[in-house]
Length: 119
Image (cartoon, rainbow, N blue to C red; front, top):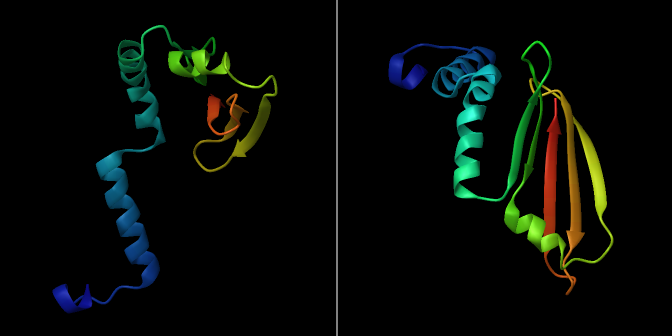
């Protein structure tokens, strides 16, 4: 900023300006939730026979999103009978839990995953 515009600013001011510019371009967390119905519609069209469902509370607030693509569902048929389920607590604007179920294929080489976001 000093070389190009002749303005001397500190690191935190530059950081906040960058974050503000990114939020203007991408929007905030709430904007992502508004896009979700459109993304779910596209997932259902691109991946037929998949299970994609968004669940909301009684006051129309987002609770969680379940996605199980048809190819992954079919892939579980050929997997070992051991499924690992793991969860991670999310922080920041996306507080909640990320749950993932994973298994190896019959040859022990590929992974199949199903993920759930519970906010």
